[in-house]
Image 1 (cartoon, rainbow, N blue to C red):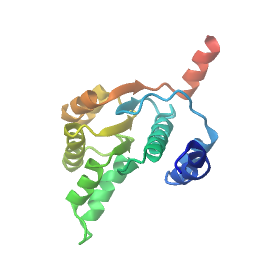
Image 2: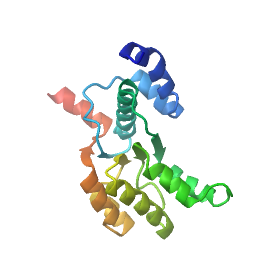
Image 3: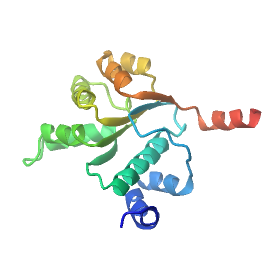
Image 4: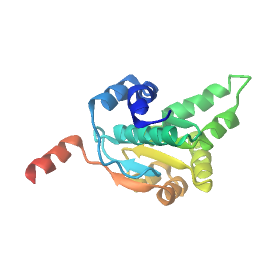
Length: 189
């Protein structure tokens, strides 16, 4: 039977294990309440502001919803450099190709692209990212993107506004502050 007790005792711990060790530790140590609704977000802020952990909590909430409602669909959480590396490695694999990787992530029910803007801005990387973002944009697929860059800074880094323009249309923007700024604000109130 799919219920909250089974989710908490069995399914959630298994879901947490799919994240990196660091994220696993944070998910088990931190308690985030009042998450925003489950939809596409561009989470922007400086290093250490909690962008990745917010994306991880949103992902867990989505997996919980899918579990309780018996929904299907693939969920992926990876960094942009990992995505690009997976495409590159497909060139050496006779059983896979670039299109296989693009389709895997383009068609996922839920995709988190962590550290957007951390990649080297080559023409090839921009082409792969444009294809992925554009496909998800056109098919209205839920996508969470984290970045240290504002959308304007991202456009400047890429030298092109097509990707940021699509991100802006498909995502709500969440601006995270540095962790110490959040605590400072709380203390001042």
